[in-house]
Length: 94
Image (cartoon, rainbow, N blue to C red; front, top):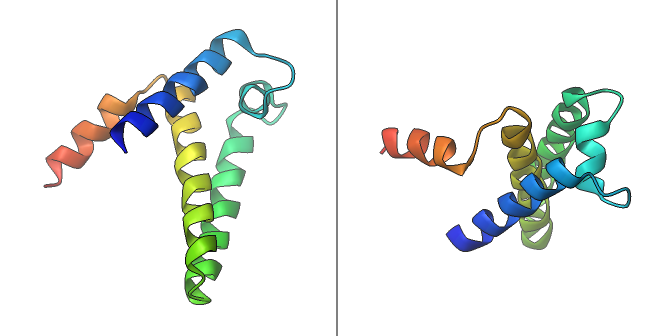
């Protein structure tokens, strides 16, 4: 899982730098709403995850949880943070 998150975060960082026109990730960095676009997506995906959990829909839970992780990583990148910041906080909570 660590490799997957590292690879995904590397792609997000690349999209942030290169801003390809056909990239959803790049569009989040250039959205007219700024970081609010990502914050709104996190709220939306969180609601969808809660509803999937309420319905006990395992496939949908995994799908929505992945959406939350992706948008959270985009937010970390926007704030010039990285996976090490997240890992340090999780380690501190052990």
